[in-house]
Image 1 (cartoon, rainbow, N blue to C red):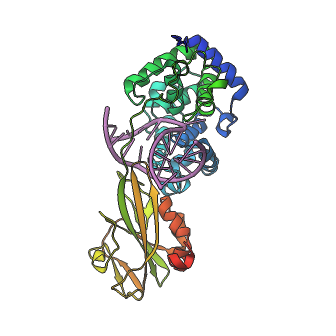
Image 2: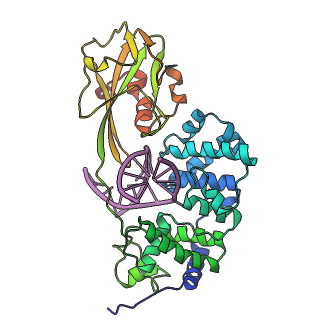
Image 3: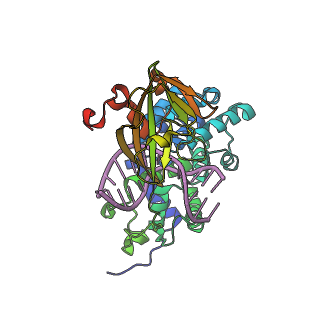
Length: 374
DNA sequence: CAGGCGTGGGA
DNA sequence: TTCCCAAGCCT
């Protein structure tokens, strides 16, 4: 097969892309408004998140926090509860910080240049370009995973797309191309094309309007581009959660620290072990709370009532849940532990691993794994 | 700046 | 099962 030395011009790329988009553009909930608050909310939610999952959270978020003022004055607890299950929880905390900052410093208004937008916490190059174009019509190209894949294929870029120099090369091409179109249309077209046509797995290049100009297609490198470094194997961690049922209807929950997975989310009191291991009596010594008048189980045995696991982006968590029934519960030091009514536990935000357990029969009825059929 | 940060879906 | 990766950002 004759290999052509193709090189698509920015103007031609822009023209073909927009023609395709007029017939294929997606109709998504957050496209109905150019209000920077709503654009911001949608873009933060959609960071590393699939469109289908993001839709639910977008509606929920705007129902609970319809304006930036309401968001700014909301308790963090409510924000995290609204975010529960979406992951990457620092996104929510950064939004809270930025909402408070803008309300206090700028009457709740967003700045209107990409430079100022980029300085806000939680807003990086992608989100700044998205708000600048979708809300203010400014010609800044968005560069996300879709766009990196699309452009690296079109230009036949074989260097690692995670390298800043590679991103810069792609950005320079896009900054020329966006000049030939309406910026917000160009950006939306880029992402729609990347998501619908120039897919990661096996793109259908037979129907692609860019294939004539696409270097990866012409050189039969579609499956090799984009080039990306393989990720490290997951670190395994073993978490032991204590489900403490006190006779007076209280239980203990614990707030996680920042700078770790699930920052500031809640969990059942946790003991972590370095290896796979079943907790014994000695393992409870030195805890920051005391369990007195323990009835069942006997002190020598602590029954494992449920097991589960969850894969995170860099770790695999093995969760073991232990049921302890006690007469009385005291917190003996001022710690990250909270004594709460068992029925109000669901008001707090938990990682999926824990919230699943709390919704299960093991938590509500004390049924063991065998009894609950898991 | 390389590594850390969730969850869900598809191949 | 295992792997990839999805509208990224922070440190």
